[in-house]
Structures are given as structure tokens and as C-alpha cells.
Amino acid sequence: MKKPNRLMTSLLSLIGVGWAYDTVDKVQEVIRKNASDNYERRVTTHRLGASIITDSLGFQPGLVDLHDDLNDTWHYLMALQQRARSLGHLDLADSIKQAAESTVDVMTAVDQAAEQTVPVPEVPLTR
Picture 1 (cartoon, one colour):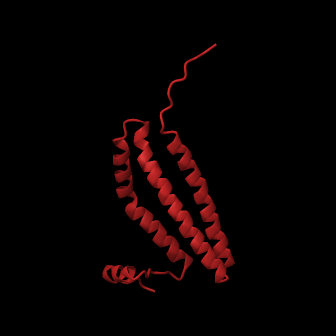
Picture 2 (cartoon, helix red, strand yellow; picture 1 turned 90 degrees about the horizontal axis):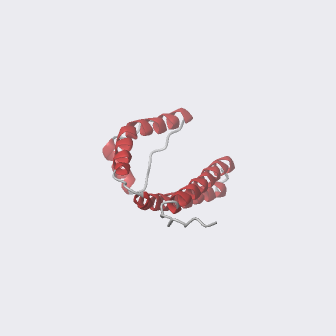
Picture 3 (spheres, one colour; picture 1 turned 90 degrees about the vertical axis):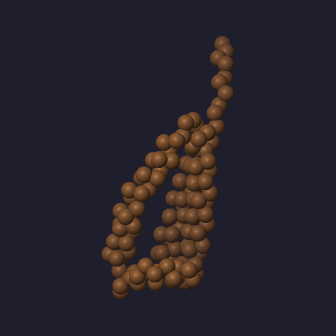
């Protein structure tokens, strides 16, 4: 099935309708294409943003925002997992649950990184 043009895709997105593909190969192709098409822009954007950080506190806002985005992603995945399970798509629900669990792992690591941005006052050495 051919994907509609950009105008139609934009109009469909306004009412919450996305485009679905009917083969695994096509899904993989679209995921690869999206990653490839956005690679340079994302690398440039994030490297430029990171280049202005001058101390550990400079990392904190981005890490806190990232944690919030990951938390939203976790909630989205859990809602999808619950819906897939209720429709009887148990293998799909299990895959989505695995993605949600991985998101928790990443969220935890980002949380720990954000905590590391807080400077620790030097502790005097004692004997």
C-alpha cells in the first residue's frame, strides 16, 4: 500500500491518524529511513547544544528534561501494552512491556546522571 503524500499525511495527523504498514520489511525500512534521514540534523543539534556546557550544572537541565520525556514514553508504552493485552495481542503486549522496562532502566541511569551534576563540596581530609 502506498503512503499518502505529505499534505494528506499532515491532515491525517491533525485528527490523530497515522500510517500503518502491512509488512515487517516495510516497517523496518521506514524505521531505518527515519533514523538515516534525521541523523545529521540530530547529531549537529545535540553536539552544538552540548558544546556550550561549561560545568556540571550545565548538564542538569537537559538531563531533567530527558528524564521527563522518558517518563512520558514509559506511560505511553504502558498504555499501549495494556491496550494490546486487552485486544488479545499477547506477544505484542509482551514486546511493548519489554520496551517499557528498558525505558525504566534508561530513566534510572538518566536520574543518576542528573544527580551527578550537583557539585559536591570538598570534604577536608582528616586522620
